[in-house]
Length: 129
Image (cartoon, rainbow, N blue to C red; front, side):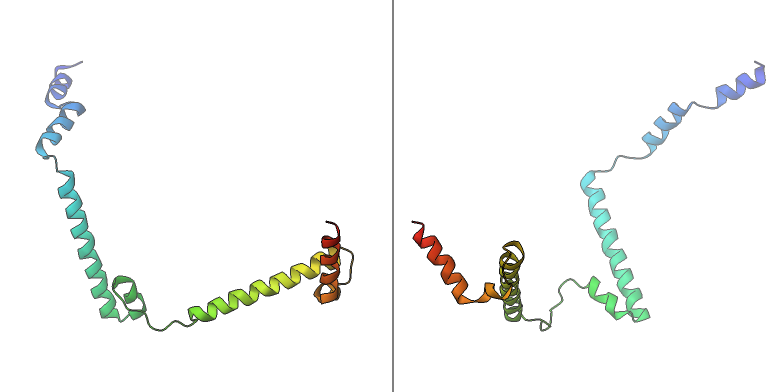
């Protein structure tokens, strides 16, 4: 190596030394402080977005930013939901009876709904004792 190259190497610090110098320059931050700063920054960003929405009049997206929003009347009331669920369960029961008796049991589908059929089944179960 020439003397010029040696001088250049001597002038340039190694990567390790550079990392140590930059680490010394930057003070270590406390985790709680950085967390508070992040929360404050998010809050600022949120209000900036809110301001932009108000300026552009995109009000449907405004609901996302407002936390405490009171809901109006429900479109589908709870009592009506309960009635619909119970009626669907009853329909599923009837269809299940008809499929079980007619298709799996090799009987007539309509016979599954007759009282005489169920009375006959009860008599068979009671006589077995």
